[in-house]
Amino acid sequence: MEKARHTKQKQLLLDILNAYAPLTAMQLYTKAAEQCPTIAKSTVYRNLETMVQRGELCRGFLENGESFFSLAGSEHHHYMICRDCNRMQDLPACPMETLGKMTAGSDFVAMDHVVQIYGYCGECAVKHNI
Ligand SMILES: [Zn+2]
Ligand SMILES: [Zn+2]
Image (tube, rainbow, N blue to C red):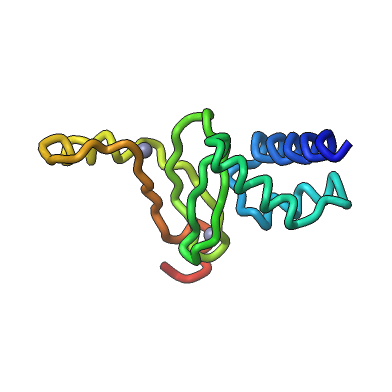
């Protein structure tokens, strides 16, 4: 029984990510609790950690260090993250296509990378007069 319940909660998290990713753990928990009010915050966090370890999810970081999650297996993404409202927008390309050439001559085999851009979304830029 215990196992079935966990699978159901994990599926709920995957469904939410599928529709709304990227999301922080807190945003995910809030959405999950709307559909499943008994879900515990610790369950959400634990499931997320496990799914990242299994390579089912990708983890990124907001500027304050908070993690956000998206589905692995979907397309490789980079995000432009708003400092104010934390809205995340897709970067239209992977900068590694250019950066990769820089590692080519070095004694290093690049396997993975994290590129995130912090700034202000259009709305917040106006609000802050930027
Ligand atoms: Zn914003
Ligand atoms: Zn990339």
